Image 1 (cartoon, rainbow, N blue to C red):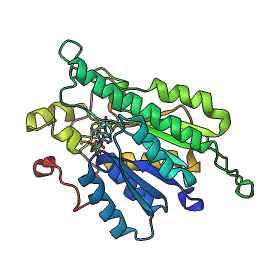
Image 2 (cartoon, rainbow, N blue to C red):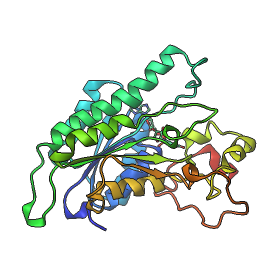
Image 3 (cartoon, rainbow, N blue to C red):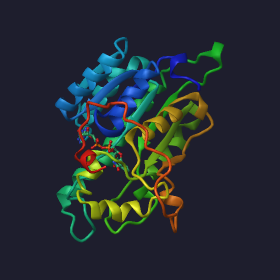
Length: 282
Ligand SMILES: NC(=O)c1ccc[n+]([C@@H]2O[C@H](COP(=O)([O-])OP(=O)(O)OC[C@H]3O[C@@H](n4cnc5c(N)ncnc54)[C@H](O)[C@@H]3O)[C@@H](O)[C@H]2O)c1
C-alpha cells in the first residue's frame, strides 16, 4: 500500500458508523484525526478508543454541526496545517420519506446536512489543500483527496426513497483536477450500522433487503473505511470524479444466488465500543 504513513494525513470524520471505523483505520495508518460530530458523547467515546489503541495519534475532538457553515469552517481550520484528506458523510432522517409525505422541514434539514454540509466541507478543504506544498523528492502530487460518502440509493430506485447527491462531487473533481485535488465518492450498500438497523428493526424487514444482496449479508462500516483509505492514498492517484461502489454487488444484481453466505463479515475495528441493536439479531 501507498501511504498515509509516507506523509501526514488528517482525516475529518464523524464519530460513529463509517466515520468511527475510518477514524480508527486512518489512525492505524499514522494519520491525525479530527472528530467532527454533533454528538458530544459519540466524540468522547471515539476519542477514548483511538487514544487507547493509538496513543501517538493526534485526535482533535470538535463538536460540529455540519448544517452550520461556521462550524464546518472551524473543523477544517483545526485540521488545516496538515490537511490532506477529508471525508464528508450525511444523515438518513427517519422521517425522510417519499415526495408526497416528506415534510418541508425534513427536506430542508436533509439538504442542509447532506448537501450544504458537504459543500461547505469541500469548500474549506479545497481552500486549505491549495496551500499544501509539493514534495518533489518523493514525486508526490500536491493537493489532496476529498472523499464524500454517498449511497447506492444515488444509483438505484427504491420503494423506500431517499435522495442522494453525487453530481456535486463529480463537478468539484472536474473543476479542481489541475490543482491536484481529487474528489471521489464512496457509495456504501446497506450496512450493519445503527443508522440502517434501527430502521430495519424486524427479521422480515431485513430479509426483504438481504435477498437483493449477492454477498448475502449487510456490509460492515469498516469495509467502507477501507475503501476510503484507498481513495485517500496514492494508490488511487489516477482516480477522481469516481463513485466507488462498496455494496456487496447490489448495484450489479438482477437475480441473486441462493444459499448461505460464504465469506464471513470482517470485524469492526471498534469492537467493544459500539452498540448496535442489530447485534442481537445476527
Ligand atoms: N448505514 C448504511 O446502511 C448506509 C448506506 C449507504 C450510505 N450511507 C451513508 O453513509 C453516511 C454515514 O452513515 P453511517 O452508517 O456511518 O451513519 P451513523 O448514523 O453511524 O453516523 C452518522 C453520524 O452523523 C452525525 N451527525 C448527524 N447530524 C449531524 C450534524 N448536523 N452535524 C454533525 N454530525 C452529525 C451523527 O452524530 C453520527 O455520528 C451517511 O451519509 C449515510 O447516508 C449509509
